[in-house]
Image (cartoon, rainbow, N blue to C red; front, side, top):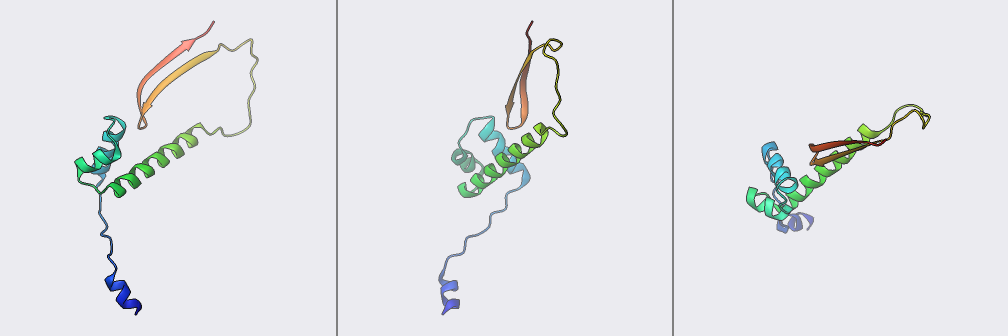
Length: 106
């Protein structure tokens, strides 16, 4: 009986997405401000597949950001009198730097 139920159930087909399609999807969503649904329709990718790809991209970007900003070793201290306060603003879109500004306070 279990074999009959397995044959009667509909099995989903796996859709392989090439790396260049993943890059196009990332660019459409992050740079061109398309929704995941619109981008997946343009690229002929299933919505669920596109959604999982975007989820993996976001998670990998967060992991890279946390790894880069993780401070190794002990804390360091400076005297406030000797340091010049500085403000640095960076604009990132999908991990690529768009603009950067440095402000020095006196």
